[in-house]
Image (cartoon, rainbow, N blue to C red; front, side, top):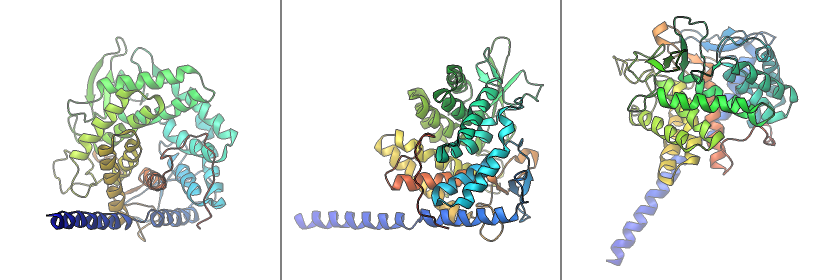
Length: 410
């Protein structure tokens, strides 16, 4: 009997050893080195100025579509460069990140045209300030936060997302959750308390109105500006008003995880877990979502690598606020997502982006099966978070954290 028990224990240990070896196969540094090489290829291809920012590479092209600083994606490229500088300590990447970050400075003082200032300014200047303590970046963040706050409607309790869509009294999109991080940081670092109140009121109102019974998210919620009540939930980038748009669900998981970090409000953590659960439970076997979970022609629908990278990054942070069982699931799933992206979705020699097969706005016929800059941003962010997790470091560092770069890897 004792011999039988010993055999079972040894078999279990051998099995555990095999599992650990399988996990060790995924080399995070190798993927980060790949990203560094690709980013340097892009830098060589760009015009010799900071006025042209890479946004996407269509699936039938190898050249970046370039945009100006007002484009909603303009902060992802400098943010990506800051992350790669964090990994390498390479001054070439630092100088390029600074150049593209400072190009966005007018956004902090111009009138707000939409809600995307957090994406634009915090991803760029926020990461820049975290790593360099440059006071110009801090000034950009504080001014941009005040500008974003002008879109807040106190009757509704949310930030207006698209002022140009005048057919809707007051529209708020789930993407807007990500911009609350900038307001939360600003309120703690020289901004007014009103910024904190705006961020939390927006998160509360969204939490109460933006989710269906299964915790899948609407893309857009329309509110009445007279009484602040919800009129209806709709979509622009998903398949239909009742379907779960993949990246939109990712914004929800990421946004409420971040808001829990900033506030320690247990309701935000509960929402992060609920939105993650429906996302994870409905994923295909390879863990990379179709652009909409309810698109009618699955499996012959485009995938969205950007949603996979976004959620992988969110899950790695969410694991730190979870019980042991959930934490293991989140880390395991996030790692598997990154492995799949690194194995079957990297751009390689096809173009100088990091990833292929993202979907931007399928109903509009734009950026379908493309390389998109925000997929690259969240991919490298997730890789860095996994590396920190493996090293026992904080997965998310404060913007005020000191920076000690590794030895230059380039």
